[in-house]
Image (tube, rainbow, N blue to C red):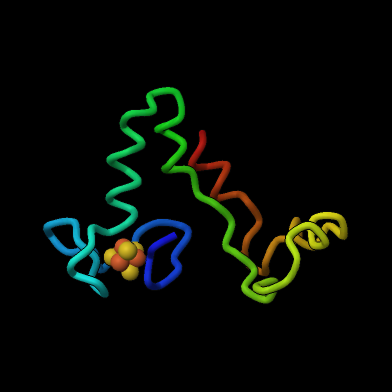
Length: 90
Ligand code: SF4
């Protein structure tokens, strides 16, 4: 991930008209780059528009393996019930 804002669910809204990053104007927004590359993956390219649940930043710097074994990485954050994700797929 090269996004300077660490945004994982889509572009921040500050993408420049030329597709470059608002924080680092010398680089192409990683989401523009990801979308362009997804067009070369016809079978999976459409999945890029699926809404993903937000990351739990409280788990940052902890073990993903231990979090998975304990199931804490499957807990939805408040306000996220997955309904938006289902609507996006439908
Ligand atoms: S323009 Fe793109 S790469 Fe730059 S901060 Fe926003 S989402 Fe991240």
